[in-house]
Image (cartoon, rainbow, N blue to C red):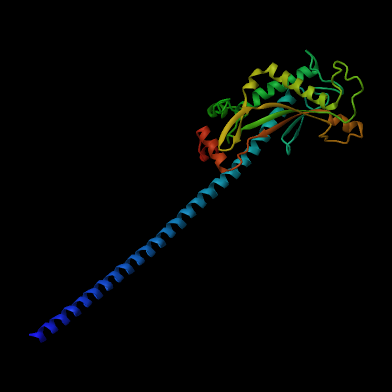
Length: 299
């Protein structure tokens, strides 16, 4: 009786340890399965991330190429605008106007608007006729390349397609600066005849530039409705296109020690600044604002 009890207890103890071993083996097996599962998931996630990175890189690469192409189109449009203005002024009888393509400048040399020491644009003068021709040229050449205050194209694409001055790439002017320049000779004491307050070349260039600006918008006031895009952080705003700046003798383009050089420095420049998206986000913002896709403007 006692012997049987002892055998039975040993069997129960052995059975208990076997059960614990089975449980531990089972738990270890489950743990190994979990480790394998998570390892596989990590590999799958890495593949997904790599695939996503490739797609993002492809998208970014496409956008960068589109941005580069858009900037090329902007340069072409600026050249077309400059050529359009030059051709118009020449047909109006002002063949001496010039273009500096590298700087985006439409140049009115001395004699087109002002002679040495002059700053006024009087009625029926040659300067008045020239400023009227310039205003008319701007009013005809620019509408397809500018926006409204609300940030939409000033003229619809369908209308521009039939225009002499088309804008097939939706490249817009940001600003046009009417710049006044002079030679380096000092103004005589007592100021200029007509305004004794003009005692420096900087003041003279400012008066010439502002008088040109006022004459243009007086003859063609719709030019004041021309706006251009401008990037501000993540947004796109519009500002009036036409503006004024003056440099006096500080930006010469010829030798001031010679009479011919001084005459060449006395000029009015119209500097055309095109809107250039600073990055791909700015390009996307512009296209969204216009309701266009890259295909619409051949990017």
